[in-house]
Figure 1 (cartoon, one colour):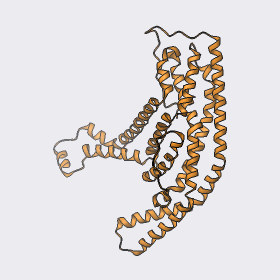
Figure 2 (tube, rainbow, N blue to C red):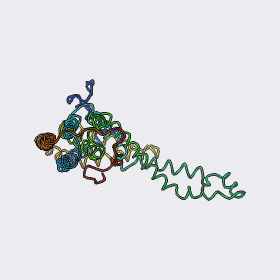
Figure 3 (cartoon, one colour):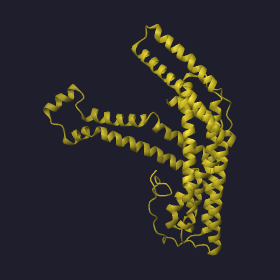
Length: 357
């Protein structure tokens, strides 16, 4: 399934140069005549359509929280806060940020692929390693156990091997996610500005400003870049619907003919049967997914434009309020070295409203 996702990723990346996010790439041929692409085609249509709707809904939910920014900070230079807002917006529109945001999506997809198959592999690998090292897995080890009782702590590890494997998988996923968050921060001009102006902005405001800056950047990215990429990917996928249908029909006939011919090994037969089942499932879902995606495509461009306008209205209102506050009060002087209070740790798993993601 990972190969299928990578095939669809190439479709998406083909459109990125048009938005200034990647250097020009040589043109690639359509994939509709490839059986792996065809098998995953209805699922991919559903994934893109669903992701677009979810990103739009999440961005709209963040609007109310973003509007509250001016009232959430105190004892600060509001002009500097306004500049942070402008840089957060500009970051979200930039190809530098968009490249990394798309990479982050791909990394997240690895852990969600096939209902967490990668997490299960990590968990199983850790669990099996513990059992092999400390459990009675060989005749020689069993012989040794007759001479010397196993250490209680070793047996405890064996008993908890599955639980420890699950913990290791969760830690691995979070470590990967955190590393990509760091990469995203490195691609954010707003994050750099926030770090440079932390004394002017006020240490007590940093947790709020970090979350709000991330939310504005993400809302800008979704409004100006991501939704358009979703729309273009659906448009491109729908152009292949006829080829995909023909590919499914042709390869299904070929696989059934091979199965009927007999003289197959058990493994080969099982693999072919799995392919046949996948193609039949794709055939059953094809017409509905194509119809639903075509309907969605008809309104996506208008919905994207509406979201951009609504986002801009929120941004303008926040900037106007911050600039009014800046005019009403003199800029806050930077505190003397060593006088700033240590900021509370920032929970980057929480969204800007304080609710865990």
